[in-house]
Length: 487
Image 1 (cartoon, one colour):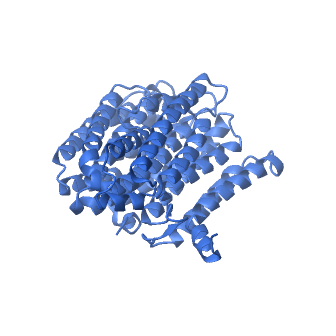
Image 2: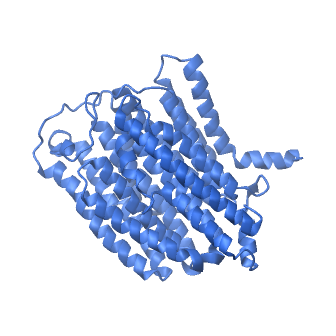
Image 3: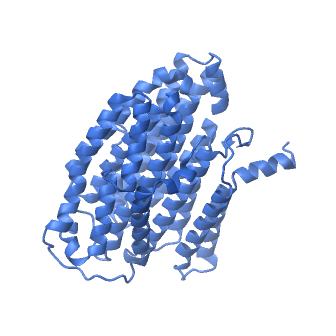
């Protein structure tokens, strides 16, 4: 039986997750029984809940890297703290985008925000999980919300298609992950990552069953992070889902997946000689094929989907570098900074599409952006900054993030990955600048009226993302106190 002191420590460790789930429950009940017709209250309360949870997280700085809860199954350390802060920012931007998009598309239902907040809680649990079973629970909570959100436009066939595709492949990935946990447990008699790490350092558990388990876990997390060759669901789901959902999915799923990957493979470092090659291959394939396939797209949502695959490859370079003692700190901190950058520039890019979309038209293709600078300069210049940042061009936040991961690869002796990363980044500039060319140098086929009416939420989200992308690119030290993980 748990003592009151132990229970207090446990509750304190998961208080941010309790807070975000509490807000979700209030929205769920309130939307049904209290403010049935005052739909505008849902995004406002969701934003207040997210800001309150963010304040709760920041109040806990500096996070104690030795803090554990629930018999070591949860770690409320700096990796959890930083990842959760990024998730709160992603959720905040996603709610602002949804505020505009759902109203314009006739989808303004309160359950949207409930599902979003519960999926955020799942991603937070993934970041805190120090036990493979807890990690699986977090993965499923994150995924269930995303499955429903992907099909939220219930009257649109492509939205329903994206939901069922995501569900089927997500279930497939979960099965791989669960079988991997079973193999690891069979080899070590535990699912606790700290205990597994101790066993591996002592020379136990290095069996064929253990290696098979690691491989299956990598496949399961590879699906969630959209790494090549586990990426097949990404372009179809990103294109078919409502744009506000796509924006959130691109951010939250990546953050949760890579927080879990960093924690799991840090614990499995004693066996790095067995799994490092697989991580290196996945990084190279994701960087090369993600960018190569993006070049061929004319649909901006599909282009950004393949782009997200390439960015997952860049983050895998950091995972490959963390096994080298001299590069460990640089790799983890670089990955955290890059997740911050990725959140702002990706949600910002999708935010421009949400801002432009009208009740009778959903902006998605390159033709939709043709000549945008002529009739809506603020949107065009905002998209310009996001494209430059995604391409890793200074002085944007994306450049600093790529530079930090590149530096980790150099320090870790991963020269091949560093060269491929540089080449892939050059390749990516082509299709990012193609969007810029269409906006700035092509004549518009139609001139849509410029008005902020009904688009205020998306406008705020885009402007916040632009400011962050530029400010943290020019002065990255402003984030340094927050992105220092496992000091």
